[in-house]
Amino acid sequence: MARKYFGTDGIRGRVGEGVITPDFMLRLGYAAGKVLAERSGAKGAGPGRGSRGGQRPSILIGKDTRISGYMFEAALEAGLINAGVDVGLLGPMPTPAIAYLTRTFHAQAGIVISASHNPFQDNGIKFFSAGGAKLPDQVELDIEAALDDPMSTAGRLGKAWRIDDAAARYIEFCKASTPWGFALDDLKIVLDCANGATYHIAPKVFRELGAEVITIGVSPDGQNINLDCGSTKPANLQQAVVEQGADLGIAFDGDGDRVLFVDRGGNLVDGDELLFIIALHRQQFLGGCNGVVGTQMSNYGFELALKDLSIPFERAKVGDRYVLEKMQANGWALGGESSGHIICADATTTGDGVISALQVLRALEDFGESLEALRARMKMLPQHMINVRLSHRQGVLESDEVRRAVAAAEEQLGDRGRVLLRPSGTEPLIRVMVEGVERSEVEQLAADIARAVERVGNS
Image 1: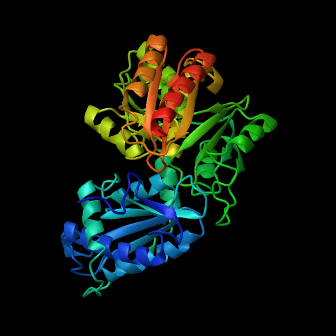
Image 2 (image 1 turned 45 degrees about the horizontal axis):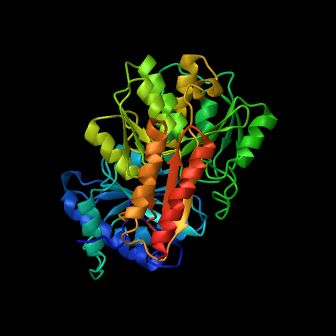
Image 3 (image 1 turned 135 degrees about the horizontal axis):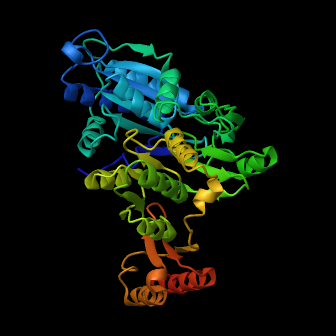
């Protein structure tokens, strides 16, 4: 069965357009409740939370801070209850917190209402399985099929309850991801919480570990999530770190599954550099790092730095789902994207901005070095990308002209760089990316390939 609604990262879109409407959320809640109840074997057989002993199944709902979350939370709750499922309401919580709490409460699934790093006008839905991972493809397909079923009231309706200590539970989980006695004393940190789901979580985690914390982006109003703040807009954080004389800055995105750092000079430290620091720390202090998964967009300098450490590296398609799949296939615990979506699978089941940040800070403490000193051990290579808009994409990448242009660039670069051509998943364009040692050479080669792509795609 072809996917109609679910993408690689759940269901997402502009509120009120396409499928992102309250009516759709009501039907989605009902369909998900029916499918997950049947798979749990509970089928609304009796009162209580959880499916043990024939009790009703339970599903948790969390959300970020965008205003439409209230509306969609109510619609999903109604659909789930109508399907005979009990609903635990978590309120505003980071996406990785829902994954953790789903495991903690032995729920059949967790639902996140969020559009991550997108503006407040967007929203979406992401599911976690009982184990805190993405739902299997077949379960998503079953839910899609059930969306067409007529809604009817279950013999026993579910009930809803609010989990008042959700934030405190997750804060302790984050702190417990570090060793006993780990402290951030004498460290001055600026936190940018993107006016999103970490606004009431991250400051407490870092303060309770002893850091002096200065906050920005911690006043959500439903419409300012990711607005000129957070990991996608770090300029204010970079300025604040310098002005406050802080040791470093940390930026999360709207739902808290991504993290970027800023060093004391105000320079941005991206996900590739953070992954390198974590891998380097594991190699030297934790008995070794058996491998790291990046993506097609990971900087070539990252790959070369890991090679120098004899740490295996593989690239997955862009998207945390693909990164995690390759990590699991290889039996590796570390992977992520340059955007700052980092997965430490030996600490949690999904990308977690707070836990990833703590892994980096643990490395700084054990090495006894500053962030700028550790990042300097890896040399980022110049990367240039050109988005080529086309009248058609069919056969462009397979054409002789484009292949000759790519081959010529690869021959000139040798082992000093790489070329990547990647069709956009949402627009009629092809992204041409070249990396190498010399910026001028990289820009020229990218322009040469882009011209070939444009000629073929617009002919």
